[in-house]
Image: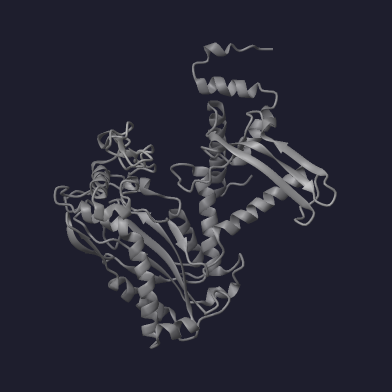
Length: 482
C-alpha cells in the first residue's frame, strides 16, 4: 500500500481531488458529475423529497441531500451561453435545433404537412455608423484590400473596429442595439400589413385566412452590433395544422418582407444627442427554404442547424463580456435609498454605479468605448427606461437571443418537461419503483439553494469529463466508430 503525503501536493485542486477520490462514496460523487455532462457551474441544493402512495399512505421512496458525499444535490446550471457553460449551451442548442426543425419539417406536435407551407429565411442587419476594418472577398473567394489598404487575416483583431474612432457614431450604435427589439417588433407588424396589401385584402380579412409564424435569433457582428436571423412561415388561420390559401405564396412573402424591412423606423429623441431615426441596414437578405434532400443551399435541416448555433452565443462573440458590470448592492443606481427616502452613496462603487473601472476591463478599445457610451447615455433621464447601465456588457442590447411566436412549433419548456419526465422514470426504474402514476403517487419535496460551482477537485473531474466527451464527439464526427 502506498501512502501519499498530501502536504507535498502543491495544487489545492489536486489535493481536493485526492481527498475526494479517497472518500468512501467517491463512486456516487463521480456519478453526480457524470450525470451533469460536464456542466461548469452546477447549482448545489440541500433538502429532500418523499414519494407517497396516495391510496395507502405508504412511503415509496425517500431521498435527502445529506446522503450525498458532498452533502448537496448537484443540478445543471442551464446557462445557454457557450462562454459560461459549454455543456449546458450544447443542450440548449440541441433543443433550439429541434424546436426550429419541427416548425420546418414537422414533429413535436407539428404535422409533417408543414413542409409544404411557404417558408423563407430572413437576415436583418444594422446600418453603418462609420467605416470599419473588414476582410473583403471577391465573388471568386479572393481577399480584397480593406479601406486601410491592408489584407486582414481572418483572426485579425482590427476587423470590426472603426477606421477612425474619433468620428465613429458610438451613440448611434448603442441606440441601435438598445432599440433592436423594437425594430423587430415593428418589422413583424409591417410584415403582416404588407402581406395583406400584396393579396389585395384588409388586415382583418387576411387574418381570417392565414397566419404568420416565425422564430428568430440575434447574433453579434464583429463591430458589436446585433443582427437577426429569422425563419418566417405562412400558415392557415389555425396555425401549423392548416395550410395557407394557394395564393399566399413564397413570392408574396418575400416581397412583403422586403417592403416591411424598408418601412421600419424608430425615432429616438434626446436633448443631449438630438433626434435620430433608426432602421435596418441595406444588407437585407431573404431566401426560400427548400425541403430536406434537395440541392438547395437553404434546406430546413441546414437552416435549423445554422440558427441553433447562434442561439448559444452572446456579446462575447464580438469581444465583449458575458457578465453584468453594474454594481449589485445599488443595482447600478449609484446610491442606496433608505426606507424614509434619504439617499446614501454606495460604498461598493462610490456612487458611480460601476462595479469595475472601465480601464481595467480586458476588452478591445472599440468595445470599451461602446460600454462607456452605454454608461454615459444611461445617465440621461430620457434613456432611463432602456437601463443601459445594466446592459452595458451586452453593448446596450437587452432583448432575448431567441424568440418565436406560439404557433410556430413546440416550446423549450415542453422539450425540457419531456426530458425531465424521462429522467424521472429512469430514476424510478433504477430504484425498483413502479412507473409513476399521478393518480396514485405524490412527490413532496423541499429544497434550498446552497451555492453554485464545484469543489476544486470536482471541477477537475468535470473538466476531464467534458474533454473526454469532446474527443468522442470529434472522433465520431470524423467518421470514427466505437
